[in-house]
Amino acid sequence: MIDQKKLSYTEWTSWLNEKITPSNITDWQQTDPRVWIRESANIRDRIYPDSDSISYGYLYENIPILKQRLQQAGIRIAAYLNEIYTP
Image (cartoon, rainbow, N blue to C red):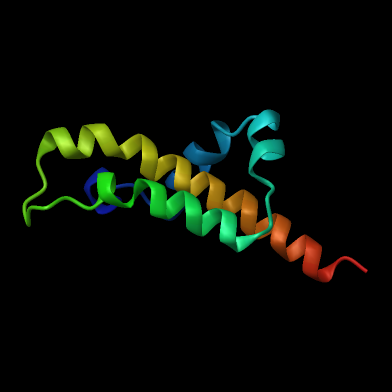
């Protein structure tokens, strides 16, 4: 799904960063990986299709989830590292 967009890492990063709000940052700064795992488990059946071929409809419906999960990952790893390395 990421490759299909034909964006560079810089383009992806810019686009994703522009869409993150201060409210998102507050909501996503959970540093407990068990929370992240639960969220992933809850969407697993939706994002992993039963078929080997991925339709345009699948991509259209799930790209927002991909983008949100990438944004959350960036915020969460930053919060996690801050927690670990803050004296």
